[in-house]
Image 1 (tube, helix red, strand yellow):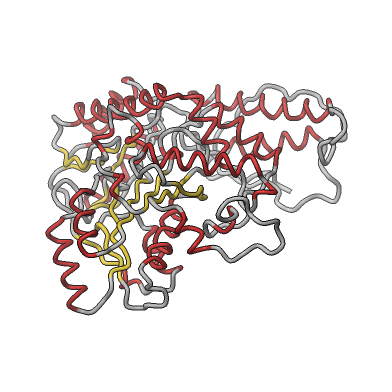
Image 2: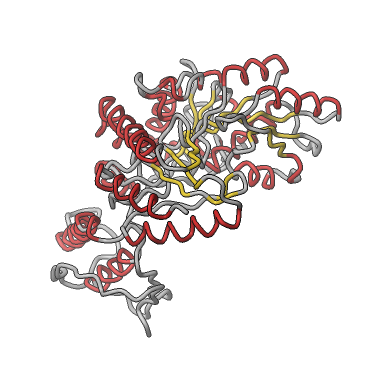
Length: 479
């Protein structure tokens, strides 16, 4: 049976020989004594990962192979050498975020300490469903969410819960908003957001049993930010139709251009009408951790709830998202069902009663240890580097006849001026392929009716060489 299928022909990657490991590998760690064979296996797996990292610059960001290993478990368990070979096969077909030319998406290289925390979290196998299953890690999560919420301006009593991605954080925020406003079961309720808001909001309303028409996109201004006059008109229209507003969602970092909605006037408008304000800061909220860059995402603390995804820029391995609330007690009041098979919570509620997820791994360990590795100065450096790279790329592209779509963050989208939708589709597809040939990977989003190329400048390995090469390819592609 074939070990892999490939999407394109490519030479087989060269690897260092795997270490010889004795068989068999213990199925479970011995609780009474150290197991040298288990440690050698884990050491070999870590060495394999380090080798993959160290060769990242010699491989394309987008692998030339798309592998499919054997799927069904064999009759007998595989020996250590075969398991490591299976791992290597999957690694050979993996996306390569550490390559300096990986500029397509919000997927930076991982922090070393956070990778170690991921391994330890898997080894501990604690469950944040309930305190007795994760006593210290539950306290860590609550404490870290509280610190993050306070640091982002939500107040000394704020807090939240970790979630597996920004989509789930946004969904939970809207469920809490509906519960808080007493609109559960109200099919006519609407949610207002920027026309450039993330697609997760549509999914959230679908899961909540609301029709697609319940999401009202509001036009954006020339900077890509939600238009306050347009929002006022939409609110008046909703009132005139007798449709209650479940929430207004602001975006701190839109997906294509990194625009930031004007949160202060949005908050004033929402408070005057008693409407919940949620901020989807999955992309941009982390900038508020830095005194030097907080003004890029001002007034986050005026929100009722906030989504933040440290995985998108700070290098915390996936997944790492937090839903933060000014009043974290609303989580339990909304989601608590009781856990009669667990000992009572020593806090207000078990972790499994503070969100949609019951069983949860200790993802907070990655965030905590990763931030400790960086320190406040390291966080500043990551953010400053991302902004500097975006500014430099914009400087390089400014003289060209391009329509640049950017904002205050580290994203920049562009398309030649004057192209219609069909021509922009062809240009973006052809130019993206030429960039890939130069080991530069950009994405190709559809924005304002035309395909653009988009660079995300959060990769700390990207330097002047890559940015100059990008400009050269783009300039040669222009009609």
